[in-house]
Length: 215
Image (tube, rainbow, N blue to C red; front, side, top):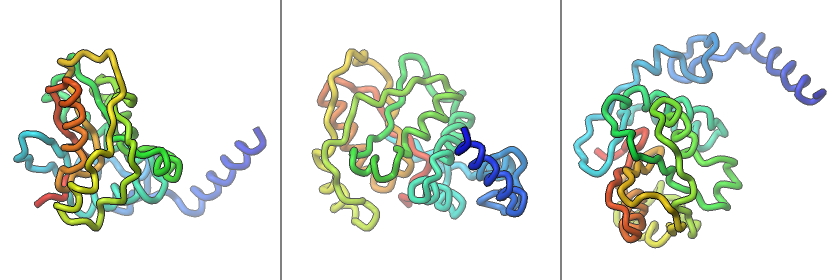
């Protein structure tokens, strides 16, 4: 109790002398966290041309910043915020009946280091708005492959081969599976995950991300 009280007191003092501001526009926040409502509403939508994946927001400087903070600066709440906003934008377009959200899994070592799976946080926000349930057990990452960040398209495909395994499940094979990730670049990771699902009898799936850096 004392520890919680001290933490709360420190937060109140910090907010008093250094009021929280929007990460995008710099305006002071009232009851919001990290991003003001105006900036959320003004996030630019991505023009999707792929038939196998859906990215919601344009990959501009605002989204780059938010994804970086989500993944590397211990701000899991950003994933939840973005997931909710994605859900609001897509709610009337998605099939929610017999559908499930599957966050692209992290390897246990990377999960331990980061403390959370950013894709799970996105799913949590999206699920709250859409009502689609989350399944975190169907796929797991059995190989702790190196980061895709600095690899070219061919190397990315090789880097993700065989990294996922399937966990036996009673999930209906006709379930509409939505694979959720923070960012799609070449699509190598989602393709590898999809191939594992397909090899285990699932055929209704597509990948969804916050954004895509593919031009």
